[in-house]
Length: 495
Image (cartoon, rainbow, N blue to C red; front, side, top):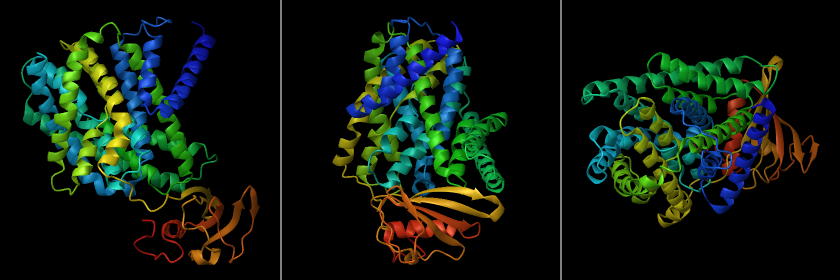
């Protein structure tokens, strides 16, 4: 097929997926179902009859897409919100994952007649929550920051241990794997992957702060490249590449870098494109003729996972972390499965594990049915659990452009509607020496403010701050945005 035809079909497919996002959002349905539907529509049973059955290529492309999705998740995650939940998230993503695997594998052997290897592979493949599904759904709900942070961090962390288990079970064709050896490998890969991610994220942030790039569009590319590169670096060291890419993106996304909002916007665009391509490809890979025969086993295992394995694993792995029962119930229901389990299900197919095709069909059915069940009902469950956001006001959107020769930054601050900055006069901001509001843009017009100029919601401020006081100035602006002009310098200071 000629290049122009491929480009036309590709562009049409992406635009159709974007329209599907809008329609599914209005209907309250998860977007991944729309993408998978597009893949099934153009697949072997659709009008275009595109036959795609290359499991090895699907695995490679799927893992690459997951790297980009995890990078986007890390870059757009607020460390201030996630930090208190990290210990609990690590517990749920490791101890909880192992509990979930055990509680799903046993019913898979007893209820649907799988051998032990296929049962444990199915359980392991279904264990991780999906970062794309969690990020896209939970960030639209007004939930406590601690709970959102727990679920976001878990979805970023739990891919790493599961990949190790799935690869081990797929590569071992005879005998039970050495559990002590498997545990040791897992501990090493997780620790090493985390350290690689921290190192690359920190070194990359230091370099980008000191190098004034000639174009603002280069910063998002550099940040995303560092995150993706951490996956390759960790893999070369036989460490967890998935954990490395998420951690490095988390470090970079929360570092004091130029053009942070632009970087987040670019990462979100790449993440959406990766999701579209990934889900459409998985829809293409599925065989509609084989899916109906595995609906009953999928429903059995899906309900075991949703009603038994997930709740028990959450409750046991969060003992001592002071989560309320409402938060535990919601976290159990919000364990969304998406592309990650389907991509992991391609690994046994590539390794020719007996029963791999059945595992793929069961997982595909579970993802479709239970995403349709869980996703739209999350707001209802949140209300039933009496959960609500504990945020006082929206975070300020601060854009920074470096003024290299002046050793200063130009901060662009947008005042949201619910900010306490509204009504505050310029002198009441009490910005540190070396920081000054130089311009105010209001209703499309700009003017140089006086000390007594009151700010309004919707204003855009241009603040020049030297390198030494930029962080202090940002903290002060965020403090006043949340607490008003009487905000102190400590506590509610934007930390």
